[in-house]
Image (cartoon, rainbow, N blue to C red; front, side):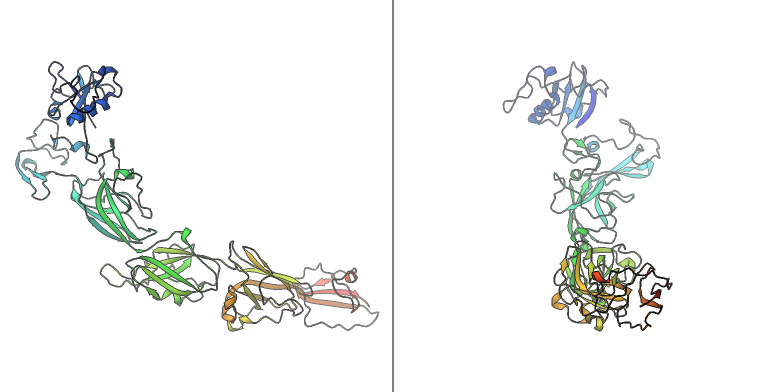
Length: 587
């Protein structure tokens, strides 16, 4: 590191030249004319290092100088501003010193200026801050027996002054934090100053290791100290952690202004954090990202596993919609989309300090959900009540329920064969094992009666009791259905053929069906007089007033070529669209 530009007594140099004085061993780094030497500062540094000199100088654009005592004498002639390109001047030295990595540049010299201007003892009153005030009548010295710090009694200013024997944090700290709670790490050490920073790193890194990266999932990392007047103990607030895997991590400390790889550190680069201050344990549940979501099928029981550290039987979880942030209003209550909420809200079924499992959870609606975790035991092993939404403040994982998405559909009554499609978000994990039951609208899916088909289904069509006829990544379709009445219907879905037996198995409400068109059951008999005008009323649902009818012999099948005769227009339609009246008809 550079110690600056200093005047030299060229006639009797304080730092003598070592040009033309090769060592008896090793390389001769000082070859050729000094002013033409390529990379003169580096060559001089290597020559000084070879001789064991701590301080060396370059002057006259390349001449290398150094001695064992250069550190004591280089400032005797005073400072200068005439050095050029780091190679000194005709009567000036560019002075350099070898710096141990991580040491504060301003603390490396053997002569310390405690306060005030250089060279002035300061025996007058000065009430400035401790960093700038001059001493006033110093009367005593003391050395700490453990840390070897030097204490000075600045009697005139009514102060004690301190020179630290070493700068930085003590080693071997062990801190404890919890996912979801503010993480505060306290450090003890010497000369801990506001510009320094503390970082948390994965334990696989050593402090200062090339390529190391700050740990993700913290509110802030790295951080400076909390404001404090102490130089020997500092608190560092990392915010609320949500690390993906609870565990033990490394604490690394950076001294702002220290020399790291010949550069003055600003504590922004992870590799500047070279001081190992110990470890921090981040306990609690793992906070898994959305890329590690648990994918399940609606209506199918699944186990909910949670992993972490320092978990307990008193921990609780809730399942909420993905739009809700854990810890926000309402997250203490599990969503009604869970078919059996007691399997979630009560204590875990299995577990220890590192794992917990809630068994046989069933979701009844497709979608995305968060699992929010409440810590049930504090550091003193006292129970924490999980009765407030603020307590459910850690997202343990995401659940993706892939299956039917409820929607409204229409089906036409009559002889026309219909299709019924169950839709889901892609990929919905549909398969040949899927089964459905079409029930009356007032039958709840999952109830006892949900296993029986509605009598609205015409048995002349295909009863959809078996596997679907078409399967895609986002839908399953049953074909050949016929609807004979206008009763609204509900479609209940089951995802696993092995368990699709009872009404409880058909628990997923997937489609709401509104039959439209003319009602065909029971058959409607109209008696009229021959060659006499009459009015024909057709009952059904979803009429628009643009319908037509044709009258054909009883042996002619509707929808055949012979039934496609011109029909009269509708003369009136009731406001609800459930009846069409055709007048002036005659046989």
